[in-house]
Image (cartoon, rainbow, N blue to C red):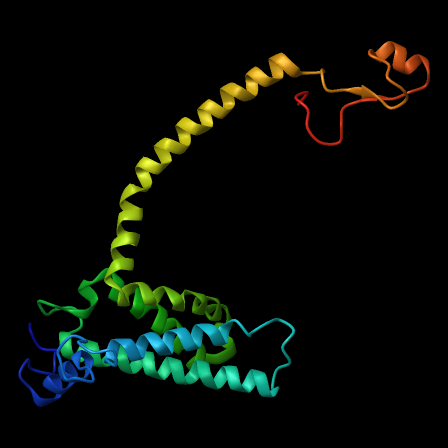
Length: 219
């Protein structure tokens, strides 16, 4: 049960090496004690690849220098992300271990994004629609920062209450909208010729009795 990929035992040299790589930092402190760590390196790659996506456009000429450069950046970033995922799956186990990689919702999101990016490279034009999923790549930053994870989790937990507040606000706006129609309907119209104060006088001189271009309560 504790074997990674059902092949690698917990105390194997391969698995210990994967744990050391994924938890090391420049000072050698476990779990990223320094500014230069495995997770921080992945963050830099995420930011760099996300910035590269900002240069892509529908007007970009295929085969141009920029297009080839962006494709190379995407390929390198995907290789780095796949290597990270494989290392963490080796260190933690995939799904059956007590601390499995896929037991975390954030890791499942990472796995989905990385897998979709890999498929776009391996299968090419056959899965061109999956290229759209690359825009989810910046979301991987959420799993790297504990504070952001807390904020997003709290946001989803409070969504039902937010919906209740929106319903109350909509109900109040509806009341004032009905009140505005009852009080001000037909009172914002004016004559296009002169200062005639009623519709009959305006039409008698050939004017047009109409509401202003913006803002009235007639509808």
